[in-house]
Image 1 (cartoon, rainbow, N blue to C red):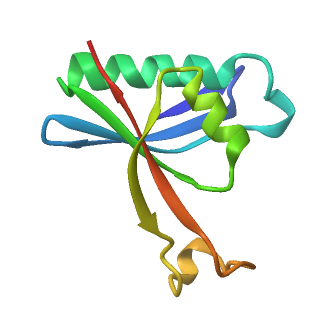
Image 2: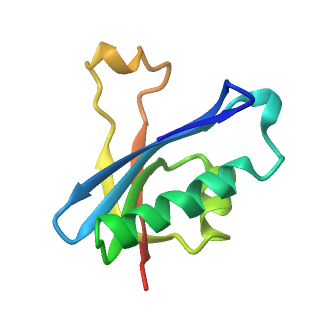
Length: 113
């Protein structure tokens, strides 16, 4: 999903349906527009699509474990760690070349009502 403001790209998020759950990924807001509520609006619309169109019962996402600021942002929106950890895909240069060797993701989930 892409979000534009006055014809310019403002943000995006990836939505994927997987059975009775949805997976969110790659939420991004243009840096000069951050702090204006755009990310929250994107998440709310993504949740609506997942609930109403995908008929998903749960949303999942992966976040780098050391990004406590991002984890806290999602926590305020109801996303909680479920205890799962996913290894970082080292060797996949499509994702860039990591500068650290201790990367892994935690899985956050939110039930949809």
